[in-house]
Length: 152
Length: 410
Image 1: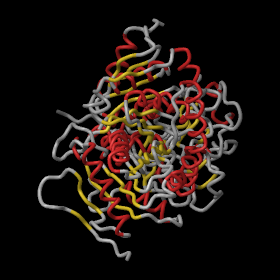
Image 2: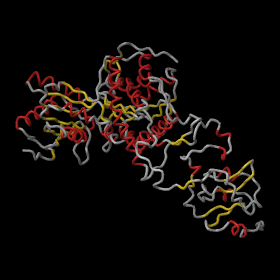
Image 3: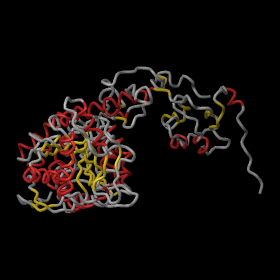
Image 4: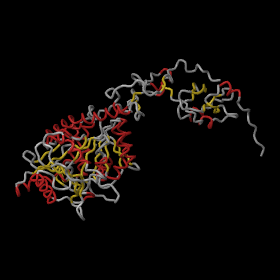
């Protein structure tokens, strides 16, 4: 099962995107609504691990933007072959992987599009969609068996 | 780079003049799609790139929407950017015009004014220019080829000023300016480039030490503040426009103002107009003064946006009757110039009699004789002490008289 403390030391998904918070007057908004992604000099930031980067408050990294998800992908470590297909295809960079080993899903940014499930090549799938309310233990308990090849 | 051979006096049409200004400003990226009558501006620019006169990129795109989108991308990346368009192309750009100004990108758009279809028409009127009037761009108006050149150079310096950071349109009239060869006195390449100055980017996406997001979504809790700040920026640009025009005047000997006034010192009646019509009205006013002693004058907003509310009412402070000439079909309203000029002079004590003429649509000629007739009509209003005609009339239109609304002032 996905380590739910995976993001404990990370500033990912810290804030909710809510109306009416942190409001400032017209004289304080940024010109052209251009928003810096990092605090301070970001030179070489691409070589740092995400949890080491100084993402700014404007960056969606620090916000949770998954509130409208209704179905979620659940990751089954036992079946996964770490092929990284889901990591490549995820449109929201919400597949957590380190040193080419799959770790789980970033539920603060995943929108539930199910692309990861679609591209997963294992049998059975290592990622499956469940309703948002389904606990991870229950989801993993319902995991399907390996399908046999159909006779032709 | 190759050295371009320039004479002290050149014979250029407005398109060529604008393209030369783009060359001298050493624009980094031109993303463009051709459309009559502005095609030669970018066509010439492409030639300068191909022949090594400019170290820039010419990006051929599939539409004007893509052209302005390419310009937005290039400007956000941190380059000096320009393009050209007219009419339908301008209309297709409209969505992206708002992106450019909202993102505060100092793109220069040379617009060769042309009518909007239907019915299809390639000739000059101000429909496209008026379409852009709420887009948040600074809009400068050239009345001839020399001014198209001069103001294009000024446009870079105005828009790129870090206290402005707004895109700028330089308008010229389709064919009458864009395709009429006239004497143009260009600056030397060195003088022109030094005037415009080195491009200094702000919030450029190619600055890897400070990655930025362009195109943020702001709903009801943020959008209003951003638009208000943008609006203040365009109104505040008035002082910088004045400075740049003054500096250009010292450099070239050609003086421009946000609102041009001709023979207004003692004028009793005035025409307010835009574009080439201004020169026609000036000739008419001069002749009328000589022939009939009518004290006629002309007021011409050189800067259509930010609308020179301040300078317009100053210019018209002492006249008794004003005719505002709109070269765009207002579609069920009074003409925009009439509305805005009227609003400005309503805040003065004089409150002259103001009437509106819709004229010259689709390139219909506006003659000196017609300008004289309009002046004389203003004089008749003055003598009668009230507006004696419909408030909105059509000038140069065939068929029975067409006019709307009568005065309620006694």
